[in-house]
Length: 232
Length: 232
DNA sequence: GAGTGGTCTAGACCACTGT
DNA sequence: CAGTGGTCTAGACCACTCC
Image 1: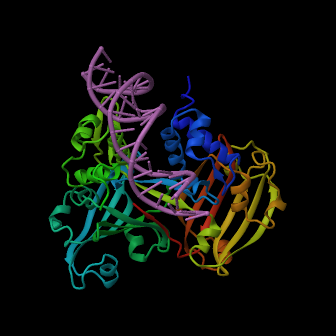
Image 2 (image 1 turned 90 degrees about the vertical axis):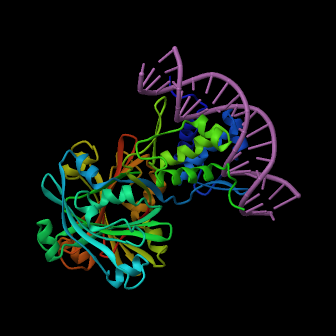
Image 3 (image 1 turned 45 degrees about the vertical axis):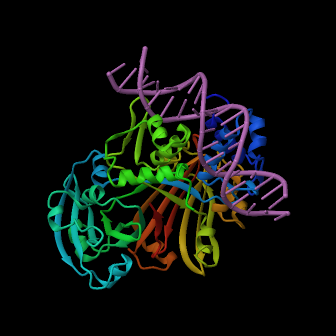
């Protein structure tokens, strides 16, 4: 026995089909919730659930009074999972290890202070670390921590635990910005990751915030071969 | 006046706060829906909506009978918008243009046929194109189209419209795989994008499917400076 | 002002799964 | 088997926004 004909999931699927086959064309206004509830013989709340799901995935645009339209040029939305480094490595069946390379309290360069909205001359905690998968360099981490936001952060915290996991437990954030890009390895970075200079590296920067206050800014340079996979 | 105290969004926010401040610790079982409904003085459906939202964002794990737990090490989930190329460029305030560089029906290399699950010796439509932002090379496209799945695709289709947009209208897909990586420019690619050989390029591959049948496989090599931004 | 989606309620039954 | 979340219903009122 398949799903009940009146389940929101069945209706959601029917909606996707109507959009795909252009029974409902891009830009077109579709029937309102009451009409659809009659057509499908279910409660309006059930229709609402199905339409809401389609709207969340970007296929429909809903407005009070104006009604529901099929999105003309949908920007496909994908859910991207950003796991903790250790898990990322271990779920690939490899052994995780890491090495703290430097850690120091100092005044960040202007670029960092402005990005993290820190006051000038305010010190931060700077650390660099190398993470390994099966003993091979996997990613190089360069991180600043705003010790004004997270006063409990000090160099001793990161002797045992890596910064990634320490912050997750001790400095939960309310939002974050992430950027993906490609960069050539500098000579220094090439030495660390054991690749030739100018090798293309996948680069991730992440800044996290507790409301208006920055918590940490991190740059991750992944060893060659790293690929981010998503489904849409 | 802020949101009603009993709105699902207010409750959702309260849940986030309890997780953030570790009133509910990682891994811990939280009260069931009926108990929370009593505490907040609202219907169970309202609690369900709030908890479901938190579960969808990965902060809670819910299981029938077992109850609801705070996720121990949440993999942050982010929503990634993948717009059509033209929009991506135009929404940055630049002018879009494109140039079809080659188009031909031929048998793809084995790597492609196996990836797209095509029969050996089956022909596909191969095209390459360059997309410009304000006249500057922005991304180089190398695409295969499975003409068995999309018989209406033929070289004439792409004289005027770019493949990206033609397929969106004429070959809607049910799912797709996307990969992000970093690659060094080859000499040839460097010439096309007008960058030096070995320049690090941001690379996107995308394969789309109609159920079990592949529609298209595309490799996009972005000019230097390209950054994917997301929020978590 | 009126039409549409957004949400809440109280109650019911179902589906899954731990014990 | 029993406890928990998952979903559906019928009805109600609210909030937004187009006209």
